[in-house]
Length: 96
Image 1 (cartoon, rainbow, N blue to C red):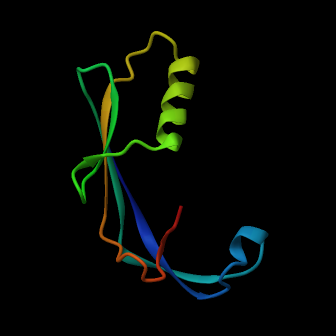
Image 2 (image 1 turned 180 degrees about the vertical axis):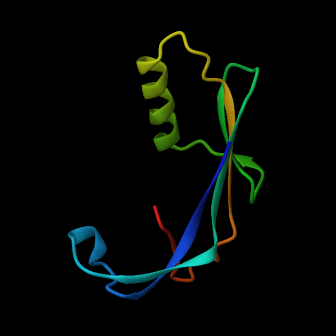
Image 3 (image 1 turned 90 degrees about the horizontal axis):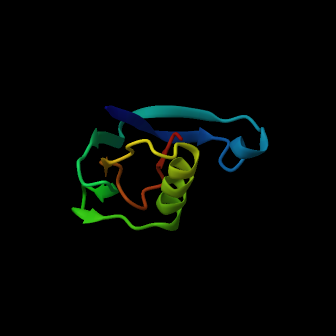
């Protein structure tokens, strides 16, 4: 399965949306794509498709531990690929 989250431009209201304030935003055709597929190796692997490197973040490890605890015995083996065509350090953000 594949999910796409568009990037966004904040026209007005920067730093107010998380506090319940008003903003004017616009979605852009660039964004973040996440794809997940089953694997047979018994692991949950997260790959940064931009660099080809395996991501080893505390956040991803915590999510995996929680899923394994909540769904003990379930086969959670998968490969998760993350890619983005958002320009880095350009003031754009994902809309998540």
